Image 1 (cartoon, rainbow, N blue to C red):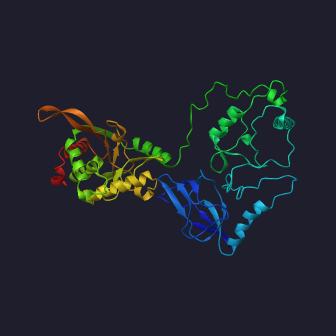
Image 2 (image 1 turned 45 degrees about the vertical axis):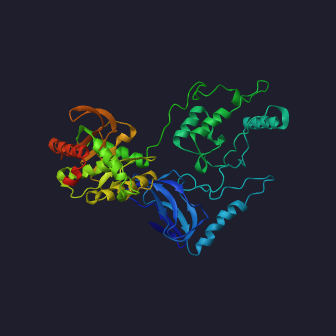
Image 3 (image 1 turned 120 degrees about the horizontal axis):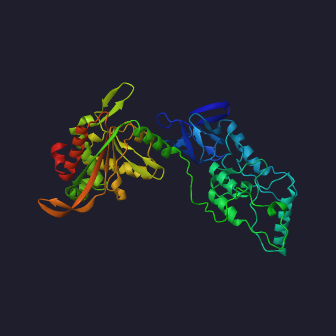
Length: 478
């Protein structure tokens, strides 16, 4: 999505990379002002409410300006980068070079101004050099600050114990970059953000930077007369020395986590959930898993208990097709799906996502194994596309990988059922009239009671259990 602002500059807008998304967070910029870009080149990575997506630029040119720094959430349709094209491409690179060359004569050496560090609509553009800040110019330092500077200079000249040098102040009019929680922390601790050396990406001050600034503040020598500001009583907002400022961490709710939270609240308070449980002997299923691993047809494929559990659920849906449905509130209709897009809940660093295998009902067991392997690998790499998480009909969540026996899963919005699989453990079990050690697990099926009654839900769960207990039913029931 692009727009023209003049004959030589194109504005690239944040596109809707999913279905009906309204915003996305800029995770990483791959280009900087002055860089040359070509049609199809990826310029940034963004995180939507569904997945992380790389955005390619649709034309050739030179990057003129990045409108938002990394970590900014931008509405769909808002311009995020300006690119000079055609005859304007050459001219676009000149201001970037001149910004370093054109430094005022001050009689002393001055750090070059970071390239591309220009105020934009929100915050500041991405810095293209180090995060060092320029000394403040053109303003007379307060008397107290002069006294403190003189004391430090005296110590550096050998007239007192050496003290850590204070971080360089930001340029005049340059507001230190920090998120609201970090600003509040600095205020509570009585720390001036302008004196804090940033270590975050693009010069952003982190909580650790604030704590480091507090720890680095040297105590004034008793033999020296402290300036009035230092001798004054501590601010009432400053935390006492014994106060542990690391006992809480605030994490902004956005991206996948924000979407998941909203979806789960909507599902929990919209669909009347019912959960049923069954404990089943899966010893034969575990033996079949080991046999399939040795089968040449499954060479290179992911073969594990989840594969046979997924196939068992697909067989149960085939025998009880009414469970594969959704509730249409507007039309007041139950929509029965004649296909199964099988969702697999996956925990990723960005939060819980539920990609699904399209038309899983039509896949053979080897094909299903291949699809499961691809789904898991893509999720772990953080490359799951928004399309892969849309249109699911039924979901499996494997809580057993965490050693959990079972749970009461919440429905994925728009779906009628979700199967939770508990840990498979060796337990004493009555088998053929004798107590023997057997591989046992507990299954939990949650379903929408508006369209799935107790009888239907029980049949589905019982069929899944029967297949896992006697895997040969896959042949007769499939």
